Length: 121
Image 1 (cartoon, rainbow, N blue to C red):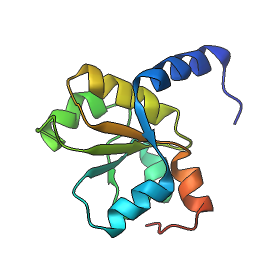
Image 2: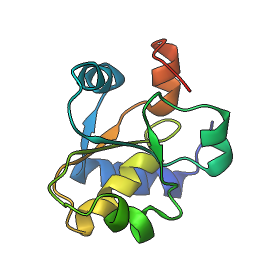
Image 3: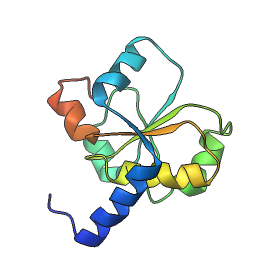
């Protein structure tokens, strides 16, 4: 997908402020049964099509509104993902501004997850 320059600039700025992880790291954490919130921030129809096994859905349009109900402890570990890692970087940046201290964006998003052959629901 070709993204507009203004969007890419915003994403680049957010990526300078957020931590990123890759799909292999996230899958290893899931395999070890580490306690963290694995959140798919894509649109409802994207999540309904398929999503990483074990992921919970909180769309980018509502995550700032609803995150405190889903993850009340701002010290909890959170991994966000989207289609390719751009929207999740923006959402991670917003959550950090809300005081969440252990939030990461999964680089490559669901595309990288699928390419790695990791489990989907």
